[in-house]
Image 1 (cartoon, rainbow, N blue to C red):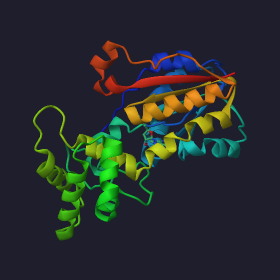
Image 2 (image 1 turned 180 degrees about the vertical axis):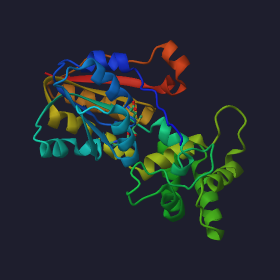
Image 3 (image 1 turned 135 degrees about the vertical axis):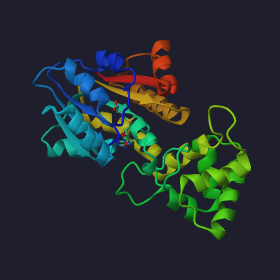
Image 4 (image 1 turned 45 degrees about the horizontal axis):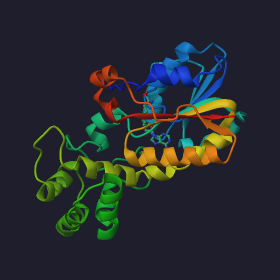
Length: 293
Ligand SMILES: C[S@@+](CC[C@H](N)C(=O)[O-])C[C@H]1O[C@@H](n2cnc3c(N)ncnc32)[C@H](O)[C@@H]1O
């Protein structure tokens, strides 16, 4: 059996900003394999509780098993539904919430999930395996303009229209079912891998964002914070690309200018050089924290 791993990013920094009440109730909006949550639980008292959300039922099951702590309650839902789910547990407000965006290393490393350009697998990419839309559906049914927009907007891909055209042409002869097929089609436009990063990596990221409607969920974070944070409580968001970060930065600014909120740090925080050296995934991370007054 494969043992999947994911190293939590900036865990000590996030814990020091977020865990203002050792006996408090917290939300881990993106539980993943529970790396941050386990770190937090070590710092919290026996009365504390953490509600861990994830769209990925398999991740939740692994997190539950690895954490083995009755203070953790796992919730198979998007963090966008946090207020409603907490209300079902009789919880109206919490002392802090973390959103560690994007995908977990375990999802990327499992070829059967179809997230990685490096391994051949089904073109799936759904965080929630019960969700309707897979990456294969996007690639095989969306129109050329929509595909080009996704690659340009979510992947910042310069040859977005050429890629979309190559896909639409290829699918006329055969449905595109695997990451390997898509990689081959992309290579006709972008060329094969030369350096460390495959040229179609951005296109894969764009497809993942589109098929999970990730930015629509990210855009709900400020509303969720307004629904669930008690006065003095904090919300922390770890982003991994400029689209997410811009969304959060602007949304936090809007909250602050409306009154009742303050930014805990004027600028986004980044992992230390040592952390980036030890964990390459940390290199693009940015941490923003907001406090309800
Ligand atoms: C970067 S990982 C979290 C890793 C976790 N912090 C840890 O240390 O193990 C992001 C997780 O968020 C989940 N996810 C993505 N969008 C989500 C959403 N809208 N609601 C809940 N979970 C989401 C993904 O399935 C993935 O497991």
